[in-house]
Picture 1 (spheres, rainbow, N blue to C red):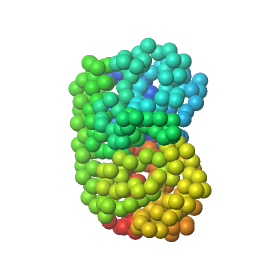
Picture 2 (cartoon, rainbow, N blue to C red):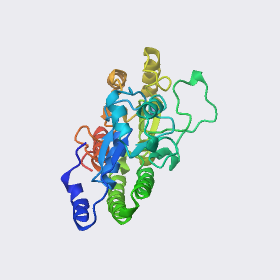
Picture 3 (tube, rainbow, N blue to C red):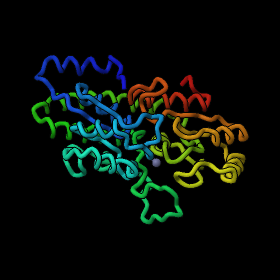
Picture 4 (spheres, rainbow, N blue to C red):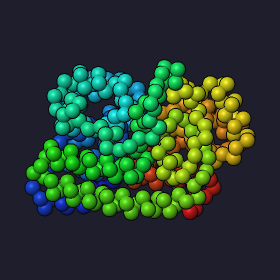
Length: 303
Ligand SMILES: [Zn+2]
């Protein structure tokens, strides 16, 4: 992932003035944590197992991923069972004792944030649900702040000699993140109360943060693609409820969304799910891009 040179400069200046920081290998399951790791440890070699165009629920434990994990000093994944279908296999095949569950080199971000939609009881009839709550919390600025603090604590734990530098990076990131969050919230005011139909619970935290409401899901059950019957029901709903848009992301099949949007006469919006696509190179640009797309769908893009 390329991070804009602007972001590198303060970190580079700090690096020149201080002792050598350990250029550790950081492996992340999702690109949002690669972008965060790059902010907090710019000298690290950061690798993400998935891109924003890949479904993070389903990943092949390819030899290249196994090799990367074998060399990792720190692994950062969402957890909350998001990667349950592939990460345990990858950890087993990589056979890297530093990044086994419970070791200091293995960090699940869900362990430091609360998740939305935890379920007490799960059975097979419910589909591929996230029993531990929704693990797609990277569009929650406050949770990402908590995660940034926890990642810094991990970095310091692994490389205590450079504690001061990691803490400076965190302070720098936190300041920029809080300023940006206030600005996003100001710009997003017109989105409050808007209703959407979306695909999966992918953007639940974004909607929750901005005061939007997902009133329907293109998936009839989590993990299942839209069916004709389900789409017909959603169309009925769209004809009786004023909706702002139908929303999905790049790795999801957009045909159901297009079908519904065309028939209901509402905008269909594809939002990037992570950094690294559509000009959204880092977390800040990702949030900017999604906000711009939502405001454009509302016809309020000049806010
Ligand atoms: Zn999911």
